[in-house]
Image (cartoon, rainbow, N blue to C red; front, side):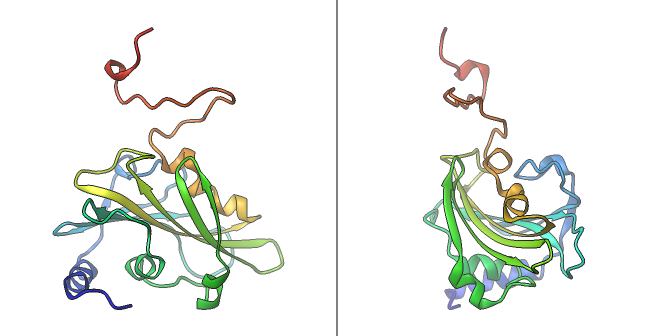
Length: 194
């Protein structure tokens, strides 16, 4: 994958760091169905891994992997690098599936995903998204947060993509009122005067 030496060293250091269980309330995204939330830190590298339930008969864990991107390199998500940082290509996906990825833009930015189906009602998605300061408040010293998600469900791709929806990953995570402009006030003092 050709990471620069310093990035390779950082990846090796974080790979040797143990995961610590943290309260679900401290996760960077508001996932109501989050099972276990873990975090690890090595220097400036901070990662979170959120376990999702797997109610299918497929092997492997459903997860959301989040990694801080330094403010010096926000740009666009690099798929190969994000997958490597998340632990590699998860089952049941193969390298060929990555060439047929789909994408869309929504309130939380660009979302790319590959779909896999067993033809009997089970659908898996491998989704990637970069969350930026334009869509949410970021943890300190971050330019963005990279998200990699593997989610297999009994249902369609829309159901499998639900944990990557804007109302889950954007901040504040709240439903929009149709026809009304969304305003994201962080404090009542920042609201416009009546």
